[in-house]
Image (cartoon, rainbow, N blue to C red; front, side):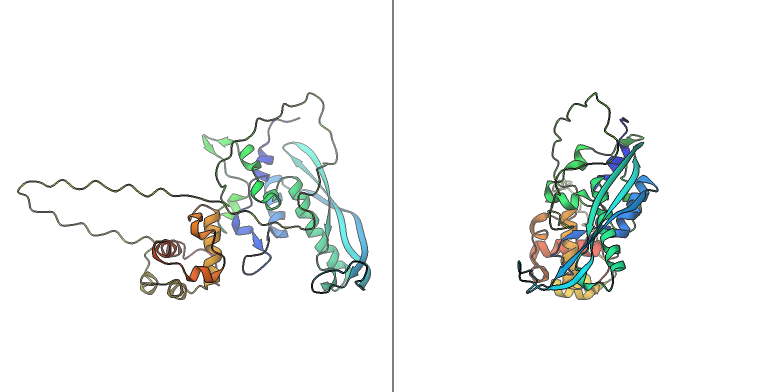
Length: 330
């Protein structure tokens, strides 16, 4: 059994925020990584892999009433259609052949036109679940309990911490997700002397039943106020020196309207952004440690952003101006 776990360490890193999507436009749904992102990251870290169909699952689809099923009473809407499929992923991780099987389900099976489209939806879900068993995207299921990336950090390279496999292509999309406060790793369990078990990877119970996507818990960050500079020493008989020109305000731009904005509504309008867009960006920045968790990680909605004032508004304006060229203005 190899002792090199470089690929595993890369797989368990958090997927950068630039690849993360939310099931709701207002950001209040569940976070997930789309199929194309998972596929790219698997290829980047592991190279080519085998993904084959094992079994197709068929069943009846029931009608919903008020978005709920009535046990034993809901009428059957579709008969014997594809409702899921089991797929097998085979890859080489740190020199060892690994085989994982997972079942993906068809979300909203009644909305697809035919079984072919339903099978593709099940395939996408199964790929994400297989990748999760290898560590990729596991943090989306673990939520705030995720600590594996700190227990197995990336090995150093040339005296510096190596970047994860996912971070390099994502740099043009967004910076990586914040790691939160440090948590000491427990003592690793002693390795057994017996041979490694080949073949299919088995895992414990589904970490989050009845859902394929789980939101990540917000992390907090604190900032120490900068130390005040020492007062200048006066020289006897000398004329006081002219005060130096104040430095440009943080985030100052050529957009005079944005620099002079006194409310979040004025600032958002000057930057061509909606308050909802500002709210989503503040939340991501607070999760990544770029902004204090209070109040930015606790903003409930765009209406709460509208109420920012005083030092909170000044910090929000400076951050938005500094990052104006990043992210879509929607």
